[in-house]
Image (cartoon, rainbow, N blue to C red; front, side, top):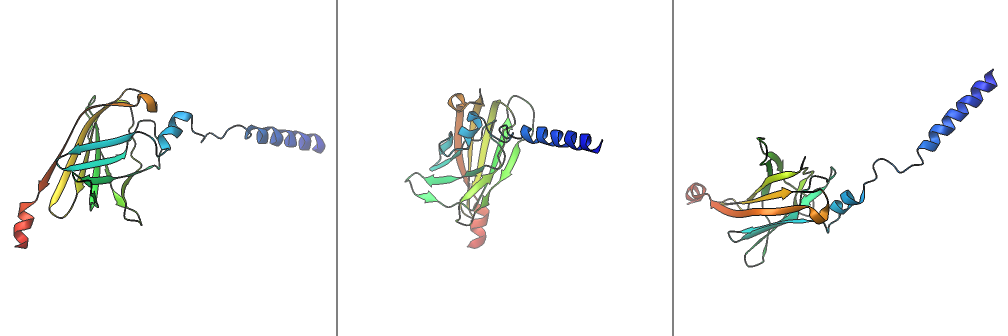
Length: 174
């Protein structure tokens, strides 16, 4: 009887071991893999003497992706901002804005980590950027995600940018 149990146990172990020969469940389909490449869609916001570019957050992106921020002025010079905050708010339903705070890596690049857009529809994106102690720039753009595929990913509806200067802080330095 022991030999029958042993043969049965070996058969079960062999059968279950062969199940792992399929593609692993973490393997991404072509659509999601295209989003993870650096050649994916780009979010570009222009206005008020500043330009911001970063990878476009999409509903089908997987977790753990970084979103480096590139900010320049109207002459093309690259600006190294002090900090930034990204907001995403759906316009189709009443929901508070989702918020991500930037971080700086070892090379000094400011980026957001793990921005996830939970579903399709119209979204209001806003990025508040602290350029220096006295200048804050707010970039806003409305985007409609109609599909999760990169070729039909989104439609930009409108976009603005404006900056504010903190006069109170400047007067305190005089």
